[in-house]
Image (cartoon, rainbow, N blue to C red):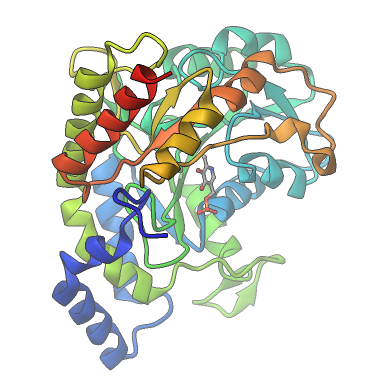
Length: 371
Ligand SMILES: Cc1ncc(COP(=O)(O)O)c(C=O)c1O
């Protein structure tokens, strides 16, 4: 089906920088720069200065950024790691793959970890906390870091959806031992396929993650220091990302502009709960990776959108802890469960035209006027 307003628009995204991207790919290919070459270093340095951290390691996904961070931090069997269920499943899966036990906390109104409930989940086995900064808004990091300090817990930020977002002027990925980012195509900064990276200010951790991503090989000596993985970010991807990174501030601005339009024209519908509007005065600087509204009659609204040519997404229809195959159904998370029945993500990406944004808004007005 051809949508009037698709949920993502990759062809238009690339059309706008076609020549630059093709030139970057051609250059890498003609020089034979494919694995761990200059484009990757350039990308890592560019991101480090954008976020304000010492080190960045390019990896093959956000999932691996989480997994290798946990590994580098020494998390393993017998350890508990506190996180949320209202996140992409990879946040939880990587804890399980390390042999550790995920402990799930409910979320608050901002859809992020309810830090008021966090302390009750800390046990003598707790080693780390993974807050997810969902939809481009940070978790309350003041409270979270204070609890982590008090109990001497490692913080690994799942910042897959929050590149460029900040809290009290500090960017996502600069609070914890590491920050884990996804370069999945629809993300704030998307590769032309899979990709990710980890941020840190810790010299030992960056060394460990660099080794983990490359089979544990110390390339200068030829020594294999431990059993590692293959999780390198391809050079071709890095070359493409180096073209895109300069547009990132403009893309963030555009997302905030769209969020403002959504907010201005949807606030009068009492049945629709909106995310906070973009402001510069609160501690939160949101980047609107997703624009998620909450409505009671979600499935009906989604169907109405479909009929009218608007593509939307529901993240997530079944909460992670209620998938029988994941063995997590001993957690009771009422707010997470309620959200799964109410959330719907509206189209949100820099290439959306104002006309398309207004069409989405008009469609919602139409739905509520005729109910
Ligand atoms: C919150 C969150 N965590 C982790 C990931 C995993 O990232 P990737 O798809 O790059 O492995 C994603 C990606 O969708 C995500 O949104």
